[in-house]
Length: 165
Image (cartoon, rainbow, N blue to C red; front, side):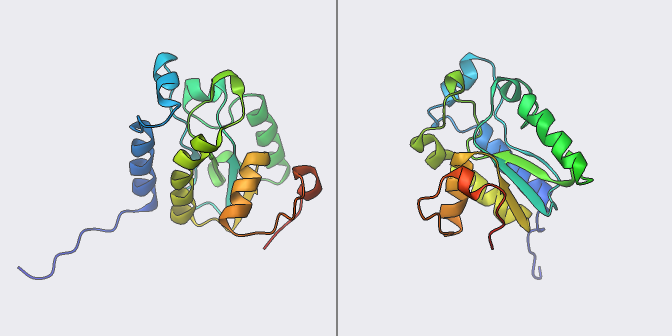
């Protein structure tokens, strides 16, 4: 028969399969809240070949209703900031650590971050961005820990706008 190897999946296929795993993640403490409210998981969107990835904390109500990240007020602000540097959403990749909306727009809990963070790690592995911009304290703390960057007890306001390598 010869040597047969499975075809290598492209980035888009890999991300689609990963998104399907998130949608089926019924072990998440946020799964029931999603189903009860007819929300969608918010996996991420943008170019699978993006050089820049934006990582937020968790979706809000508008995001959970549409299944798209950063579509509310914060999303409009992000879009305007992107346009200032001649970029559009389609050229970057936008996601969150937590893929389902926490109730009452509360901060993500440690257990929720632990459940969803493997999906974010896999998104980073697939996309291989050159730059990861964090949007919020929880996203910053997670990315710093993931890449073993020194936080040295600093708060987000002290690190805001700093490029780290």
